[in-house]
Each structure stands twice: as C-alpha cells, then as structure tokens.
Image 1 (cartoon, helix red, strand yellow):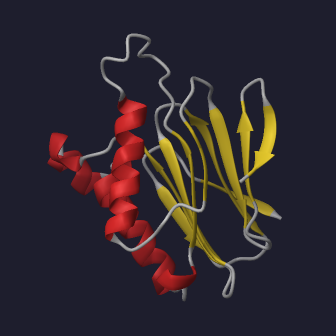
Image 2 (cartoon, rainbow, N blue to C red):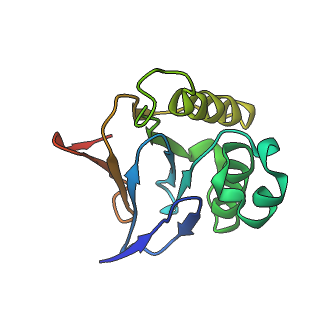
Length: 160
C-alpha cells in the first residue's frame, strides 16, 4: 500500500486499490471524502474556507481551498474515473474551532455549513462525520475497503 497525501487546499482522486488517501492537521479545515464501493473510486478534499467569493483569484489558482469550488471538482473527478453519484458514500471530518476561543469567526462551523449545503445541492448526504471540537485530526481513506479512519490528537483512532 502507498499513501497519496492530500495537502491543505487540494484534492486527490484515485481508483488504485493499493492506495491510501490521507490528509493531516485538520483544524477548522474540513476533509470531504467520497467513495464508490462498486468501482472502488475515491477522493478526498482538504478545504480551508467556505466561500470562494472572498478571494476569486485564489479560487481560480487553487479551487480546492474553498468548499464551493472544491466539492464540485472532487465530485466531477470521481465521476470521470467511473464513480456514480447515486453510489457515493460521503464522509466528513474537521471543522474545529482551533484559534477562535471567542467564537467570533466560527470558521469551522461556517465550513461545515457550506459543505452540507453544497453536498445537498448535488444530491449527496453525509453518511458519517466527525466534526467540531478543538482537536486536530488526520483522515485516511483505504481504497481497497473504503474504510475512513480519523485520528484525533490525544484521543486515538476511530472509523467513520
């Protein structure tokens, strides 16, 4: 097995059954994971912000940074590899409030709300999630099995 790292503001898709998609250090960011168990196609997005309108130039350069530009690209890329929207399993993790103890910016909550809205607009529902709180998360998707694991700082590993 080999790892494909999904960096902050990026997404990756694969149909390689020996691959593991993995992303690190999710704080207020959110990992969106899509997996089609029939054709074993999966993808992961590590988004930073909910809405590309705050920086359209940056959104054109790095669309994976934003929920509204990254999620459609992730979905399209999975479909190009043979995934069907009706079979996709959707899991999300992250959306913590790491550096905002006052709750003023609420970036994690705003990211999560945007993810839910955009997925719903595409006819997709979240099957499992681990969101909120104030711990960093590492998320992985095993392509051979579709298992999504979340490692939470100081709290161990759990499967979504």
